[in-house]
Image (cartoon, rainbow, N blue to C red; front, side, top):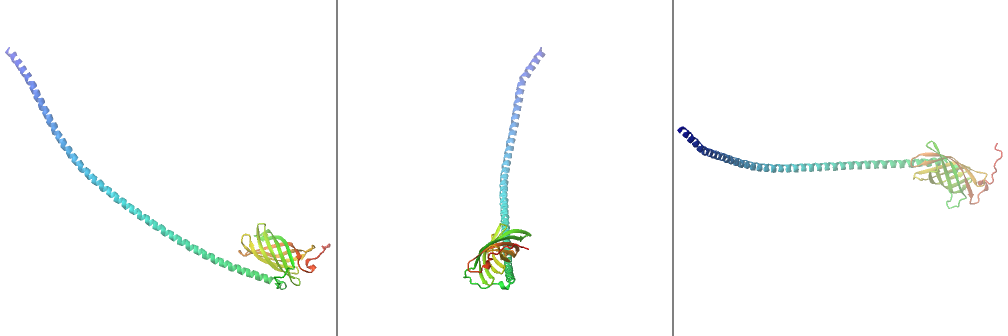
Length: 306
């Protein structure tokens, strides 16, 4: 009995003590946790504050570094700009110098070419004058003494007028080109005996594509005739025309046959001489009293050609 009572009291005592111990233990645990948590919070707050301070210092240092880098970049940019500007100026000076050098070279070459052209022009002019003089001298020497110029009063009326045409070929470049000579406004003055002084306007055409107007003068004696003169082709080239040959009356009154057996065109610009072969006829009209036989009055056509 006593033993059972003791066991019951012991159980009650244990049950009474257990809640108090549990509460105390729980309170102790909570206080420890709170203290531990508070301590950790302080440490965390302190660490965070220190980190923030470090970050603020780092940010300031970074800002200073960024400002320094930006200043360096600006300086380098200015340096590069100055270098580019200097190089640009140098290139411009070099281009200007080369341009001036090329201009001087062109001017020198232009002057040299002008001097060469002037020298050649003078040489060609002298050569043409020499050729023309030799040509005139040869013409003077080739004319027989008895048909050389005689003095005729220029105011004296002409004794004869004539006009006509000859045709044939001009030998140029190993090719015979068709050509014609038209004689207009021709006049003849009787000098003495059977010698006449002759003047006429001539137009020579070459292959119906090029023409030249030439004023000619010369002499006729017996059945020989000599005419020469100068003029210009339609392209501006100066030429001289030399005609030498024979003439004779036909069976028609006032009609004379012409044959230029020694004739040619002399191009004064190039010095080239082009031979001619021409035949034709002229119609002669007396303007003063001349002997009828001069015009071949009623010459009969021979029936026996043997």
